[in-house]
Length: 145
Image (cartoon, rainbow, N blue to C red):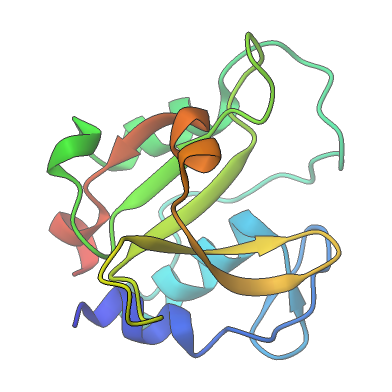
């Protein structure tokens, strides 16, 4: 199992809290990735400014930030522990993150770990509706895996 997935699973059950990044206390999707990064790599590569819950801007803030520190890959090449960016609405920027996992539910299908408003940190199956929303994949495992 990927070290990234192992650490991320330790966050499951953490409540959703916008802008936070504290295991057990609260985090959002970016906070989960930041927390896993901090646990495995140490200091974050750049400061994260405060950000609104609902982003009105049309630029790809998350994708651009990921591209500054990670190599974008074809999603077919993604391995457990790699970063997935999701576009929650067609034609809008990616605004959700998750970490690819290995389907711990025993079905053998892929899953991903993410912090989801109203649910906290969960591991979800990478179902067709989620797959259709993937906007980009990044090789996080090359950096901290």
